[in-house]
Image 1 (tube, rainbow, N blue to C red):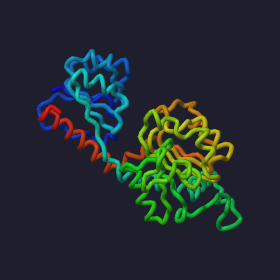
Image 2 (cartoon, one colour):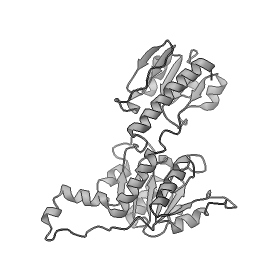
Image 3 (cartoon, one colour):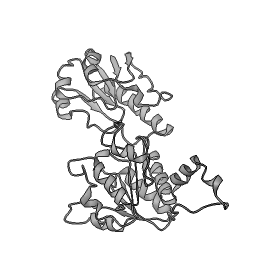
Image 4 (cartoon, one colour):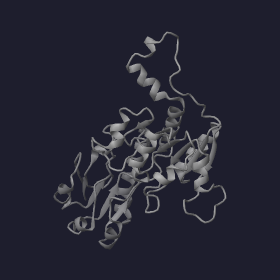
Length: 313
């Protein structure tokens, strides 16, 4: 079996994928552009990738390809219908980030509510050293306990964020689907959540119904002074509308770990705004990437390879 890993830098170098226990040839590239995919995989039996796109047109030119093993949960970079038609198995990994993503969200909640990022920025300019008192009071500090957290998406990650938030004494609301005609037990109507939540965090999948879910119209329903957190998928938010809401005070602040295009262009409006806007935090899609999560992930990738060779599935 020839295995080609197309984008190894999508994983931290100190936690490589363990080699599978069957005979194989392993070829690894740090990154692969769209124009390089076919030449690098033309004789591959197995391809490993995180974000390289495999369209029907590309897969039709790879007659030896039997398996695409993803080092991620999302499969939107693979034409799954075409893969099935061509007899190519696609295996992703799930459940590896159920600790680290909720912890990242909690970290962002504390950062936003306590203005931790602003106190830190001040020290880069020696503001404390210039204070006439032992401390100063330039930025808001609000308790997390007692705040209302609105969670959009009640899968493994959303449910765990809610569990942890409840332990902190937060009031947790799970949002029903935006256009639902009835509200399930344990959920709150979508717009009611927006109106009541001090913090809204996104954990729903990216679908045709959820793309641009947070936009000018939905932002207008947010509670005054609310914060928005997105560790889900970038396209859940209309970035232009978010920037306007941050500038005009519709939102008190936002923290995003994902953007519509990744890596972003240097002139991405949110990247530029993060340099100067005091109410915007951007982290580079690393909520999932604790050492323990990556160790679990690469172990599951290896298991996926071995299971496929053993069973053909």
